[in-house]
Each structure stands twice: as structure tokens, then as C-alpha cells.
Length: 281
Ligand code: ADP
Image 1: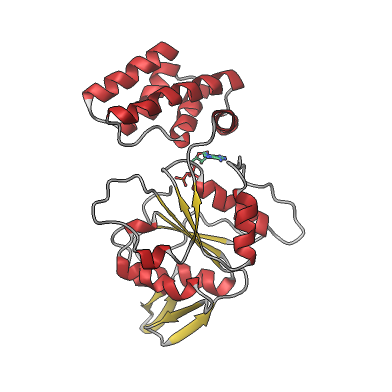
Image 2: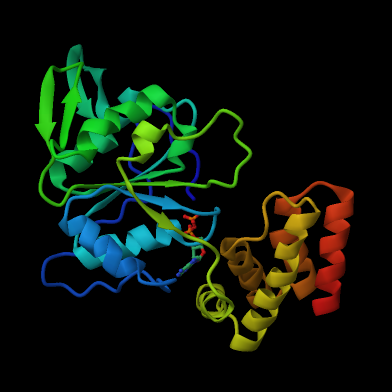
């Protein structure tokens, strides 16, 4: 849900600062899908790590941003990828003006400061990287840092949250049972139509009627999954189409650019999607 990580020492991405004490910062806009807010609060209270499962673009990241706001915790987000090393998460020694200095990685910073640490698309990370999370997910709540010999106890409020998309064709890539069983699982899916309409209208800046048309179209496009469309249009893509339409792009062109082109290169599938768009707009 975030862009590629930067080069060099991993920096937290999309981190939002904690709401200042006493100040009223507006909550991130989040439409709940069910009772996930109450369940997450209980997990946080009971120091349980959380795994968010669901297709890309269905609101997992927004949910974590909302929960961090609601719980008054800082949020540290890391987009995982297959080059991500333990050092990227935990930290590394850097040479600074001839001196060797230790620099905490995003996970270590979250552990020290009692932040919510969100590892997006964790299945992309290598197994040996994921193993460093294990002692943080049980009663010990510790992070051993081999390179410094230090063992840090997680500050109160620290919580580990991971996300992954079980739909990907990932061959051998999956989370090990020994890792999975350390997390409470939340199942996410695309929001129900009336919720998705509200999201598209709010996030896309369009009228309810147009949001309704886009969500109805999405329902038809998602049925193409049975005809071989591997990834179906997400809420994120609908929001992108809505934004283009709101900026004056013709709805047909906006839907093609924001929804069809990102999803497939297969002529038969893009043609079928185009037909459905033409029938709507
Ligand atoms: P994921 O993390 O599952 O890939 P995101 O949380 O980044 O997806 O959602 C993509 C976009 O879709 C968000 O930026 C937001 O505009 C919109 N969105 C999806 N679901 C919701 C929701 N339940 N409430 C508010 N916005 C949502």
C-alpha cells in the first residue's frame, strides 16, 4: 500500500505522528467493515499481535492508521519486499565522521517508543527477516539485537501488525505456520456496496450518484475473476477513477486509465472490461 522503500537505512514510511496530547486532530477517514475496531482495541489492550489478511487496496492500511489515531499511538509503517534484511528492520552500524554509530531501524524505534509497527505485505520479506519478530509476539515482548548484544523490552503500547494478501499466486511464498500462529487474524475484503459507495464519494470527491455507478461497475468487473482476471478492481482503484472524473476527465477514459490498464495486459480481458465500462457510462 506504500511506495518502494528508500535507499540506505530504512526509514519509516507513511508514519503519522501521534496526536498531540490534548489537541484535537481529525481522525483518518475510515468506514468499518464490521466489528474490527472493537476487536483491535482488545488485541491492543491484551498485547496481542495482529495479522490483517485481504486483497490489496481494501482498506487495511487505512484501518491501521485509524486505530493508531484512536489509541493515541505513533505509527511506524514498513513496506516489505524481498530484499528487506533484518538490518533494515532492526538497525545497523553507520560510519559518521570516522566514528561508528549505531542507528536504530524502524522496528527498533517502534519497540523503544511504544508505537504500532505495521509491516505491510510481510510475506514479501525473507523468512530469516520475519523470524526476528517472533520474540516480540509472545509474553517476552523483547527484541534481541545481535549486532549490539542488546535486548530491548517493548515499551507499553508497542504492537506488531502485519498485513498480507492471501490471493497472490506466490508458489512457495507463504507465512510459516510457526509465524502465523503468533498473530490474531483479521479477515478483510472489499467493503459492502453501500460502504464502498460512501468511501468512493468521500475519498474521490464525487457525488453519491456517481459513486453508486462506480461501485456497481466494480461489482460487474469483479465477476471477471471467474474468467481469469487475477486481481480484481480494488476500492483504491475506484477512488482513483473517481478522482480523475472529479477533475474533469471523461468517465470512460478515467475508468480505463485507473481501473482497466493497471489490472491486465490481456487483450480479451481488457476488452471485456472496456465493454462493461461502456455499458455503464
Ligand atoms: P490496503 O492497505 O488494503 O492495500 P488501503 O488501506 O491503502 O488498502 O486502501 C486504499 C484506499 O482505499 C485508501 O487510501 C482509501 O482511500 C480507500 N479505502 C479503502 N477502504 C476504506 C475504508 N474502509 N475506509 C476508508 N477508506 C477506505
